[in-house]
Length: 99
Image 1: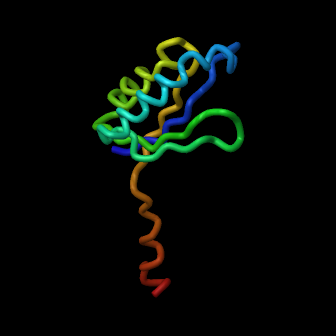
Image 2: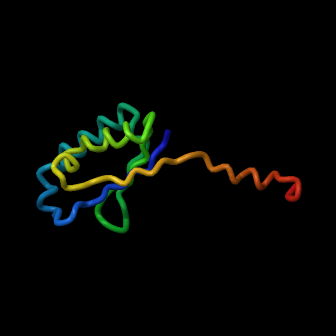
């Protein structure tokens, strides 16, 4: 199952608090990428942070993996985890009235 995962800075968290964790944050992301949990990762353009396309057997497993990021363990970020499914509206293109 695929998930859109967006970090959520916790109230009062600052970049100064983030900095000691950033190298281990990147290492953990690399491990999740190599293991197939992270499929894509992007820097957000609207604010500091990341958006991750993840793959896991359940939302619980995805949340558990994300909770292991050093910034999450330090209580500096949380995660919005949104389950994704196939876009099935392509079928409207092939409906009898559209052929």
